[in-house]
Length: 153
Image 1 (spheres, rainbow, N blue to C red):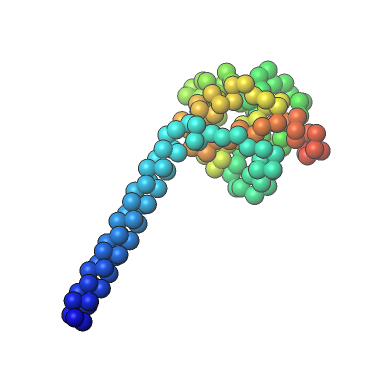
Image 2: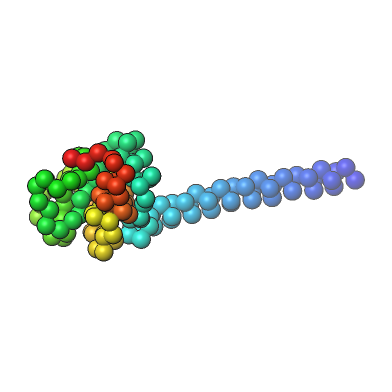
């Protein structure tokens, strides 16, 4: 009797170990699929963030670059400090702009913003994901930034 129960326990143990191995293997492969999808699916790559998350990125993430995507930018208009101006016509022509392309590619994170709502932001974010896989759209933009008395440059 003990011989049968020992074999039964041994078989149960083997099934449990095998189940754990299969589960771990599935989770690992599934995580790889999700990572790959995030790197190729613009809907997962670019996402809208609010002021709180934009401030966290601004204050705590080394290499983050805020990108002002407003059209017709003139000197002297308020911008988030250290932001680069990259209006839509330049975003759509980035292959021919080596300096801007390098800046965009080397950034750890890109945060796009405009005056408030950016009608073409998702499209521009999609274009920029060709050069950088971490692109966010700051909802509220410079208007929200200024309304809260945050610094401008």
